[in-house]
Image 1 (cartoon, one colour):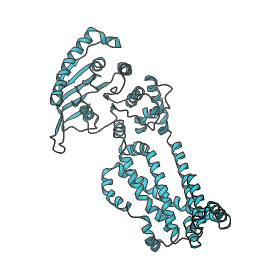
Image 2 (spheres, one colour):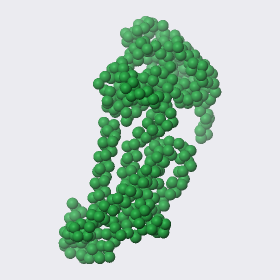
Image 3 (cartoon, chains in turn purple, cyan):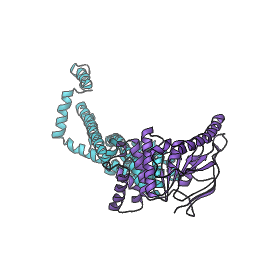
Length: 261
Length: 237
């Protein structure tokens, strides 16, 4: 079992051309484990993506540290899979080659990595598209492929930065169900950043609400909805009650942002 | 078409004396004589080989260097000022110097093309590689790629089509350098033929030579494009 500890992490972006330095993150302390699906919910610009990038090792905290199973994160690595909001499939590789990219970097022989890739291709419903270029896929298919690419590496934790943000609503709902299905089967720690309240509740076993900049964890809410969840759960009284509560929390933060602007 | 029509009108109509500008038919006849009687094919072959030789030499050195400069900021900071300076040195101005150093043999011709091409390729490739999408590089890092893996399997393939485009462009410029190199101190090549024809006031031959250069450029351009399309199917998909 994997434990991720975020220990008093802050991030201050240095001053630029006469502007004051930006405090993106107040000290954030957080422990994630138990194969939890943790969603981080916050208004735009609250530093939630910055936090995720620090966990991924793509950015460095100004103070504090991130520990994955006791060892400090110093840079990006295969033990933390990341899915970005922008489409980041390698355009010169086919679907299969994209999914097998991480395995290839680690020197896994070709027949073995193709077997793994094909298993994931089946899981995300892209059978028949193995040899397509990313350009030939829809946005939803590309993001499914990106999730498979991160999972094929068998990371200890999966980090997702608003992966469905650019998709239309229908596709988005289907993608949420697919991701939840994979998580229910594979049991893996997940850190999922979003600004969509429904998405945060539907996917999460735990929702963290972040405050407006400078970001800090404002609320930590356990979601006790049963698994497996289907889309129908979104109209259940428990779901609606959670949504109402979170709407209030987020609204307060969004108002603060608006007042500053 | 319009060009040929205007040319015909000017020459056949007698508006321009024949000494200065041959008419199209004379040009073709002179061209035929060149090919059959004066071994012009050999000249063409020499020129093509010089262009390709100097160009390949430049590419072999410039592409890896450009890749490294694009990938590593310190290397770029170290080399960029010199390369930028060297880029503005006109290759043709090196001809007298190169004749002193390397004589008037093949080496001198290759070196002129090399000097004319190498710095341009380096700089353009540095920019191309530096413009690689940041999120692709980050994605590769989170998938466990090492720095070397990033260069070989992200920066290189993602800039490869643009690198090919840079090479196609610079190959065109290399053609200009080779003719200049051949105009001075040469005993073969299209440029040499042109100087000879000038001495004989044979404008038909000169124009034929120029048109041949244009045709070869067009063909090489076409081949390059077809080759790129074949090499990078993902770009067109």
